[in-house]
Length: 379
Image (cartoon, rainbow, N blue to C red):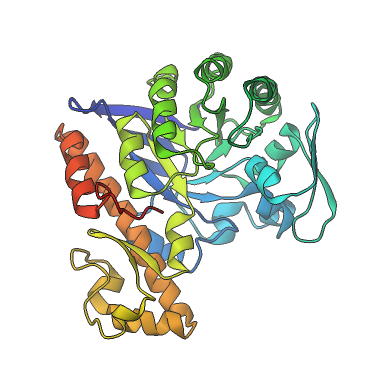
């Protein structure tokens, strides 16, 4: 029995984007979807009840951070991550690999795994495919990710080839040590940077292992958007059509639409909550920094076209006041709004696929949002 199943409902005639449903042990969810990130078993400033209220389906948690605090043994004792954080819908956990490579100054990659230092206290740590599986099995997430190396951008072809081959060997070890296949699905991660031949190599290796789903990793790591789109164009067709495809770490509105057009079903990113903490919000007319002085006497909502709780009840002037005074409620309102905005966007994307007009929707959205302007400010 497979814990994760994907159902393809419709392909957009205009773009080839996929409308589907992902079935998990904790519910079924429409795709393409955006998944809010709850790094430490919480989506920053949001309650689980609020996440459901705005239409969240699957949310993420982070293997590396939960291993350090509170420890996967404590989460297991609590009855797993769902009970620990009071979330009865699906959870995806990453492998911890990205954090090892992004947070630690000292790291040594060996065939066995990675030696590195705890970013909190400097203690020596070791993470391997087997250890990542042990932690994620203890957390009890619906979707687990295979432990991979996330190489920097740019990287030489020679380095990337060795990295891809190692990631494939690690993927096999993950499958062998994953011991909760009936209620946890394990996804493989296709790497290869911007190199088409290496993406082909990685996809061939991983699809031969028959994972229940596949992620495209190593993007949104500093490469230009056109490079990311080009890589997706030659990578997603290499992945099985009957399984979910997940683009890791991508959450800007333009990339969600462009990713869906290129056959991606699942997205996640800390972007909406991270920029919210700085007073930046996404609106139907583009990006807005509510902390700016010009909003001090602006008694309109963050977005006149939005009916979220924040926009229905509070003004730009009030939210700016809260942010300037370091009041937590301000961050809660901007976070709520940004997550609502992206979840609504994906709802509109799904509707556009259903109506075979995602290409038209993209043009309209980019025009209204301001992505087409030469001075467009991106995230």
